[in-house]
Length: 441
Image 1 (cartoon, rainbow, N blue to C red):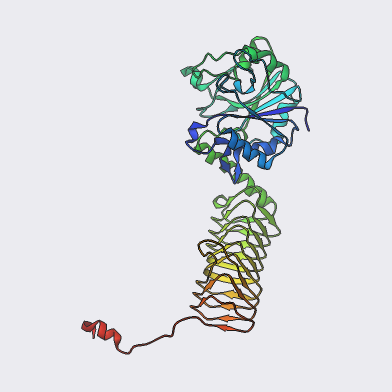
Image 2 (cartoon, rainbow, N blue to C red):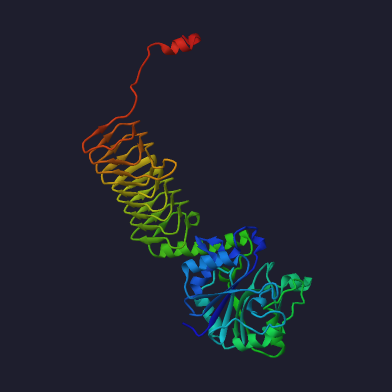
């Protein structure tokens, strides 16, 4: 761990997201944006602080459900709005109180930068300057504060809403990451004013003040692929594309075959073991583990374990399923089921079921697991042949070595060796067609 305290600013309203969900809780590849940041910075420090305001209770509840030893602070937004206000604890004219940090070096981040990496943040922490800040060089810096430089020296930062036309043409953008010596914050925070278009206290104003007093300010060139800020759903999609590329590349380096990689969606926490192949347009969601298996095109797998099996094409494996040594074909849906050495070739729904080895599930078979109030279990033994278009109405137990005739609605359990038939007797009425359509005789 480094002797640095880390503060993540997550108090904003995120109005440009146009969403009821707090901005920092929007997910990227299955993980909340804020949690992407927390996971990285926890590699760097044991003193983590998060500043909240908008939807603070909801965000705190989410944080507390996953993380321990995270210090939560609620911004005094009415008295001290803005990024610098997030570090002010007092009331009225008392702006001197800083968040109580453990260390004399303070790394300040925004809660909307989900691509940051701990390895990159190390260069901020290792700097011995009074202030170290990230700078992005962009073709279009719209939406960012602009960094004013002269002869490679940082002079200050101007927020876009306060910038004139000349400054807005500058393509050097503030990346929103700062490493301060604590004494710098203690010195300059009390001197800040909110005389700007937003009537807010800007953390960026410290840069200009420190520059006038000849403090050492280092600008670190940053990559957009790590320092992109997410302010809109368009930004969210851009950030997710970077993470998807990273997750796919890691899987392929580890030996997984991806067919048309850019078409495959994969979330954090998906695990591959052994030689696996994933065809185009597949969706692999958090909690999925795939072992020595092939997932055919246009299949979706959610929080399930797949072992030595083929899935798809166009299959959906819903959460809490474990499929081993099986073939699940096109348009088959499996939910919360254990399948061991099973064939389900096409057009079936298997929910809340345990199905044992050698069993064949015909086309159109469904387990009727829900009675409108409760879910019920279907248990099928070994070497059972379930004919096409069969409804298995749970709760139900089918022992091994059973034949179920096509078109049956099965409501009673079956014993070993049974033939199960449940359908009405067929009647053929001779010449009825011609009686019905008299003009076609």
